[in-house]
Length: 118
Image (cartoon, rainbow, N blue to C red):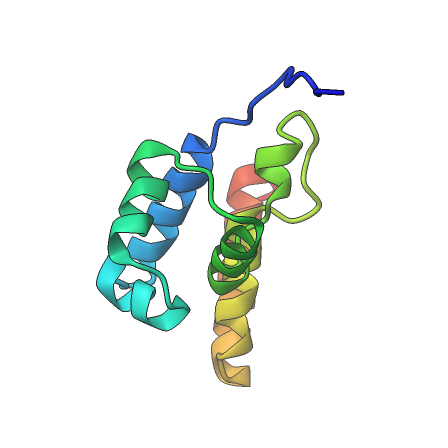
């Protein structure tokens, strides 16, 4: 019995997120391809054309750049941690205690300004 496909997921948003994360991390497609053993042309297809990556490649790209798949598969739900928050946490892991104190003080000031609690 042949199964009818009712919905085909559009991977264009995923591709754009990969491109943005790759650029922010300072990776060329060639360098990323070397790191993950992927052809740079395949990365072009994912980023620009929304090509469907294999499950393994989807996993590798998401974990490499700390990208939450929730934003793509459950767009109507609020993700517990956005991609940007996950990427920030990864950066924070490599910062000294002194650096964390500076970032904490800065975050507190930003929160005051955004909430109007000055």
